[in-house]
Image 1 (cartoon, helix red, strand yellow):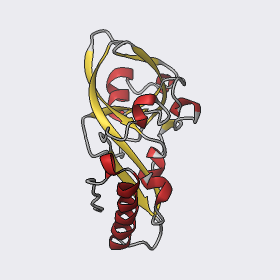
Image 2 (spheres, one colour):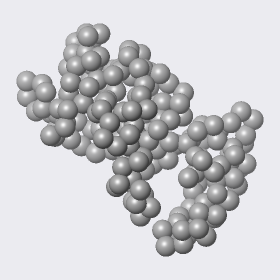
Image 3 (cartoon, one colour):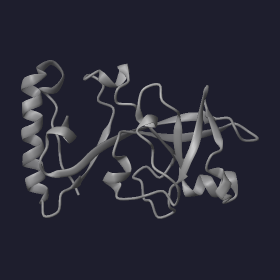
Length: 177
């Protein structure tokens, strides 16, 4: 809703992290994975160093499972082999196809994250307004100040609070650089 209703951001996305066992290597390994909302790479202004971004099909519930891997994971697990793109990783009981490798310069806030995969926003669990597990990130439109963005998104959230009082009335947003 924030992405759809605001007027000061080019895009808003979000993420949450979790630890998963990765079992496709010689030994199982605990991996920190970021599950990301649509427009994630657009918001960060970054493209994979190898491979591609997620396709619309990969961002739909029941679609193919895809993952982007960190440069450090690519170097450690795949010895910098470009053929890693297209290989499969096993996280828990789910298989994911590697679609890209993030650049070494990508400074994600949680430096432990080694995998990024899309969260289908049309999934039943993603429709629950009480589930507020995302950390939201956004990219401002050119010329927009932080105070303008704060006022705009606060207005959006106030409207959502009236529309969904049970879940949204007590939520607030703080815009930070």
